[in-house]
Amino acid sequence: LLDALVDQIALALERLRLTEDLAATELASETERLRTALLNSVSHDLRTPLVTIIGAAGSLADTPGLAPAARQALAENIREEGERLDRYVQNLLDMTRLGHGALTPQMAPVDLAELVGQARHRLRAPLRAHRVAADMPDQVPLVLADPVLLEQVLVNVLDNAAKYAPANTTIAVVARRDGALVDLSIADSGPGIPPADQARVFDMFYRVAGGDRQRAGTGLGLAICKGLIEAMGGTIRAETAFPDGTGTRIVITLPILDRKTDA
Ligand code: ADP
Image 1 (cartoon, rainbow, N blue to C red):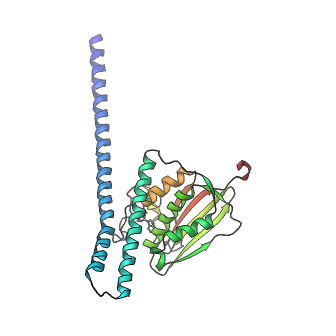
Image 2 (image 1 turned 90 degrees about the vertical axis):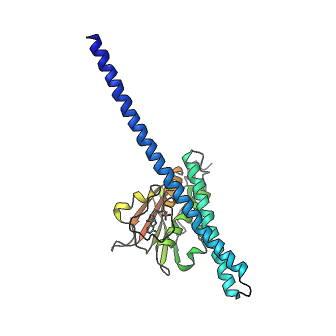
């Protein structure tokens, strides 16, 4: 009997070991898949703007007697792509810090109208082709957030709106109080995100299938936005903006500044 029991235990242990090995293998291949996806994405997304910058700088350097307007266009091209690279590297840094729990939000009272103005300024170049209609009523209270991180989120969301919505359309930025919370929504008139993808676009590297693949993108922006907003105690979600199923509305919800605890 004892021998049989020992055999059974040995068998069970062997089975357990096999299952663990399997789980470890799955984990390793998932890690490997993510690592490869990250490397592919990073190298592609760093190279795309760099190729433009090198090309434009080359034209500036090698074309004597270039008309002022052409020079100006090339210089602006370099600036826009440089700004894109800067945002991208910032996103990567944020992602790394979030992953290590090394990013602690510095919470402070934030005036959303002011912040939206700053974010628009940082996005000056890519937003040129879009109208931004901001509806930020005075009575919307201050929110409690990290102003630097929240601006980073806004820049990402506005950048997406400008990237996916056609030129000459309006991006509507609206703030509304809802009890102890404030909803900040950014709506564009682009193709929209299908309802089945509206939660998944916040996953790392997730990009809507059949979307405009011409658009440079990493699938990192919204994942980082979600990480940052949640680190600040808020939420972020995507909705359809218009009844005909088009348009994207990103809604960021943040707590209002509680004056009672504001010593
Ligand atoms: P990406 O770098 O690909 O834009 P994001 O994480 O910012 O990465 O967005 C993930 C995906 O969500 C995008 O690839 C796109 O398919 C979709 N998406 C995000 N914002 C919009 C938008 N304003 N309109 C349409 N699709 C969007």
